[in-house]
Image (cartoon, rainbow, N blue to C red; front, side, top):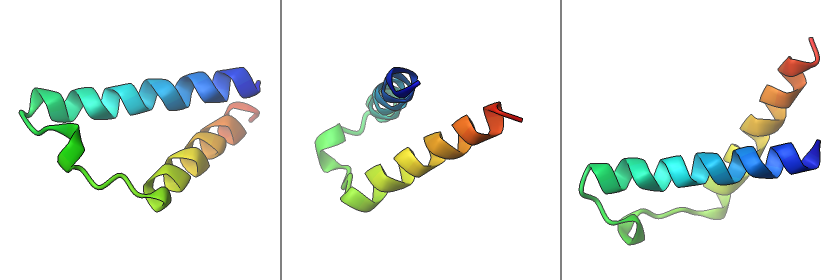
Length: 53
C-alpha cells in the first residue's frame, strides 16, 4: 500500500507542476516548502483512510 501512496504523491506533484507550467509560471518561482509537502502527504493518508470505509 505504501507503493500506491508514493505513486499518488508523485502523480499529484507532477500534476501540480504541470498545472503551473500550463499557466506559464515556472515551477522554480513556486515556494514549495516542507509544510506544503507535509500537507500533501497528510491529504493522501486521509484519502487512504477514506478508502477503507
